[in-house]
Length: 153
Image (cartoon, rainbow, N blue to C red):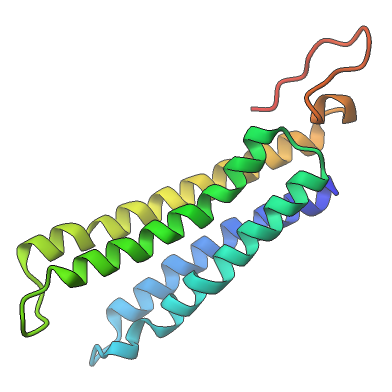
């Protein structure tokens, strides 16, 4: 189950990289239309949350520490924040639908939060790999008698 957790964590990080690629594709599409970001939107709302949930289930079944299980849900939570940033940013547009200084300031947070999604997915992968390398007793938070406590970074 630990190997499955590592594989899902790796797919989660890879999906965030693909998400950045799809954002760039949308940004450079000419003429830019509402559908320019359709793949970015769909991928971000479906693939990353599903992989985060699947990886969380795998972490729980692998008897990962509770903190690591919670960390594995973080990319999903940050995707929810991504949606809220876009909704708030669009709410601050003017009456004609054009961006304002305030809406641009809020919408700029979308990229920063995207980097947080990537960082959290990278941290999940790193810790999943450390968990997979740890002895079985250490993975559940305990140690075998006479063994020093293993630390999962």
